[in-house]
Length: 321
Image 1 (cartoon, rainbow, N blue to C red):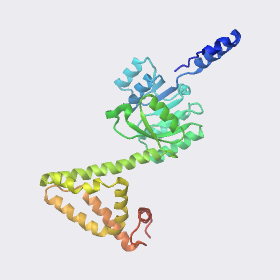
Image 2 (image 1 turned 90 degrees about the vertical axis):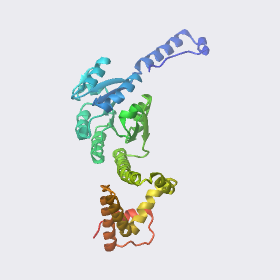
Image 3 (image 1 turned 135 degrees about the horizontal axis):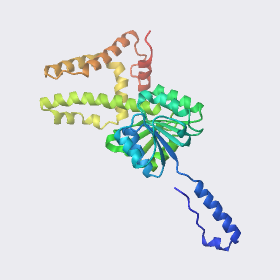
Image 4 (image 1 turned 60 degrees about the vertical axis):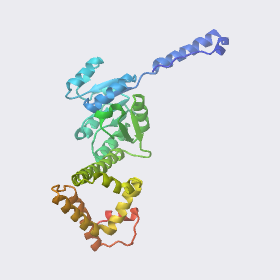
């Protein structure tokens, strides 16, 4: 990480004094280019995941863990680094702070960190704190001239470790991307994003994928029990050929038109699964969603027969009188 100074053959014609001055300047520049110092607060699975590749990439690490596990103690001992038990004056040396604690402690750790870091330090919040909590933390950070980056982990750390995709938003996100990628990581920066955006998108993605997971479990177990699973895949091919955005937009814009009829269809499907000895845990909630929309339609009819997705969402978000 230190720069080197080399002279081309063309330099050989320069006076000796000038060559000496140039060499001195290059030497000073090389000496002053120190590796970035990165503090990691929290040495659980996430903290340890990034500690090793960052250290191997040449960054200087500062470690902190209130209740160190044997793995955390071994890591600090292996690198002969002190293991701090709380934020303190030692954070004044950090160029970046990675907060890898649990979401419940995200805001309090941010407040503790801000008491010690120097102006311009980057603070990457890797926690699962709520969007509102991260917005609060960002507001406090900006007031202290600290670059706060909402950083969401978009996969299972235990499977991909440092290669697990990250989503980042906020001031300094591009700089964090450069640091993490030097260690072999992957970061997608939300262009124009602000703190809270990254974790919001992570949660929304979970709403979609976990909801689909639960529904898929009930769908395929019923299909398997009836011996029609392969035939089911064939019947779903039209959905497979539709772009995802087009498909989910279609579901929402037609939902506000056909909710009442679809509620009856869901009720019948729920009864069918129950008759197979596979009572659904998902479909009662689906039916409730449709019935609520149907009841609102009776009180507040749509102003158009064929709404687009924007119009459908505005109607759904409108408060009932």
